[in-house]
Length: 327
Image 1 (tube, helix red, strand yellow):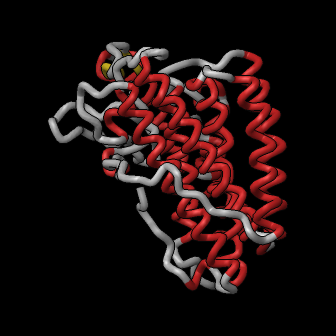
Image 2: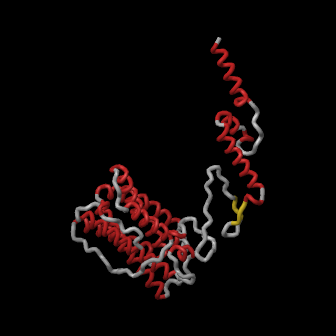
Image 3: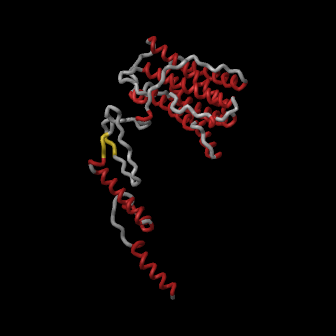
């Protein structure tokens, strides 16, 4: 008898919530998806339903759209989670239009570099690393010849891989061993991001052809896995390989500059993204862009040879502070 009374009392309390008709709203509710869930999660789903209704209303009203930087109208994002894209401006007060990086990521490159600096291989691993890199340069030179912009596109898709792989593995090591990384996780990820920004810049100069895209796909698949295994087996060898790759990158961009100075390649205005990323003058040219990119590659060369030297001296990267922000 008591169980029947308890059941009746429970039904009186839950019956209106489970079986009462819900108010009609647009979106998922109109299709019958939300009412079922709302019976069990009334407070949360009611808030979500209200947000969905406001989003639908905003889409129908002029206030639900905003003017994009290119003059086209785009729908404003309405989110239950309260996340809004910040409206950023440059120092002159104009709107910041680059979603791939922020004003505080921009910097002025130090172009006072030694383009001829070279690590002479003495040990067997160093000689193997040097031989591998030199053997890879021959087919690239034959394939691209003097098409420097296309060569840069492929070069940057490869150069952005080691920093990400090394940073990821050091990150996992730091978590696994409950220890600091000495800043090297951030330093290597900064390198990867910087190389990716090189790629974004040269995409404004030229577009890859279909066979170049296919080459990038194959190269990235092979190089990522090879470097991943190589870094697990010998970080000092992996960093030395990258150091020599960056030496070749410095050489490639030096040849690019020679052709620009000789007039073989037109010295066009610098892409807007490059002007904002490297804080170049408004009237900067392509030559200025190649100059700062070459300086970045020289800095990456130094950092990776330095990391390899740390391992060769029997030390760990975490025991030596990483050169953060070394541009």
